[in-house]
Structure formats: structure tokens, C-alpha cells
Image 1 (tube, rainbow, N blue to C red):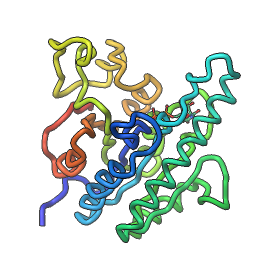
Image 2: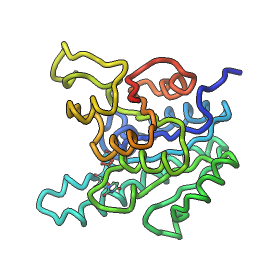
Image 3: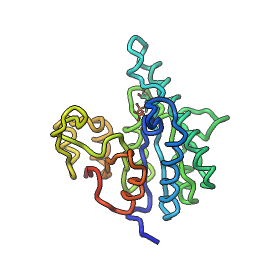
Length: 235
Ligand code: UDP
């Protein structure tokens, strides 16, 4: 069996990652591909926590004329839909999971309790964190940084729709240069836009490395865990 580089990871899946080609909602085929790869990582014995976004349904900033707090509450609820879809897909692969929400909805999922989350991980259950931090004006990237610190994850795996961090938008600029390695200050100082500053500074203050990689190839999740140098690492 191959040896994973990490014992405990936190994987950030943006809402868009679950939408596949559809760009909105959930593409069940794509979700299935992603869960096959998460299942491979699980079988390597890695403890896995997942933070899921909600952008495939709603982002706070989509509500232009809305009260920001209300719009953000809607965004946090969107993450719950994705968390339940992930849970369903993982459990259909016989992987025990727990969804924990930062806003209580006990009929649907457990409330977020750090000690319980850690216990689930120790018992080899995948924990899916929904509702972000539970607070408006934050993002699920910041949630990932926060939960990573709380549960002592060794690394954050940021699965994105681009295969790393570039000096300019690779979609608009064909000459954009990809970075293999960056420091937290590079992200903060150059305003590279890969991750918001709150999330970046939280990782910097707590020394949590982040690996950005593309989820266009779902097998990248396994490669990163096995220590292959793909994407961009921030440390
Ligand atoms: N959100 C929030 N607080 C949080 C996390 C998320 O208010 O702690 C809201 C915010 O409106 C955000 C939306 O939930 O736009 C969905 O999260 P995000 O945009 O991070 O999802 P992603 O882009 O990863 O799909």
C-alpha cells in the first residue's frame, strides 16, 4: 500500500467543485467522481475533514440589494445542501460520515462541537463541516483555516477550478505564470486573490500549509495526499 504524507487533512471543496460542467447546482456524476477519490484517500488511512462551500447555489455577494447578513445566511444554508449531498455519496461507498453545522439544525445534522469532531476523525469517520463559521462576513475558505487550526489538521487541501496560483488570471492571460511555492506574505502582499486575507492570515499565524490544486482532475486529491508536487504550496 502507498504511504500517505499526512495523517489528518482538511479538504476544502468549493460549491463550484460539485457543480462540474453545469457551473450551478450539483452534478451527481461529478460528485461521484470526487467521492471515489476521497474514498481512495480514506482507504489509505488518512483522517479526513471536509469544508464545503455554497457558491454553486448562492454567495452572499450575489444579493446586491440585500441586507448583507441575510444574504450571507442564505449562503451558509447553501453549504448544507452540498454537505448532505457529499454525505450521501460517501455513505453509499460505505464510508461513515458526520455532518456538523455551525448553525444548529439538529433534525438534519450535529451541531459543530470540536471535541466530537476530533473523536469522529479518530474513529475514522469523515467529518463534513457546513454553514461555514456560522457568522456573516466570512467565507468557507476562512472556515477551513479556522477548523484546520481547531482540529490540528496537518495541511489544507484547497481544491479549486484552476490548477494552482498564477501571477494573473490564466483564463484571460495565456502567458500567466504558475507558482510552485509561495509564502503567506506573497498572497497577502501581492493580493493574488487566491484566498481571502482573513483565511491567509489565520493560516500564517498558525503555521498551517495550504496546497492549491485543480479539481478538474479529481485524482489530484490522491496525488496531493501521496506527496506529489502539484499545484501551488503556501507555507
Ligand atoms: N458564508 C458566511 N460565513 C461563513 C461562510 C460562508 O456568511 O463563515 C456565506 C457567504 O455568503 C458565502 C457563502 O456562504 O458567499 C458560500 O460560501 P463560499 O462563497 O465561501 O463558497 P464557495 O465559494 O467555496 O463555494
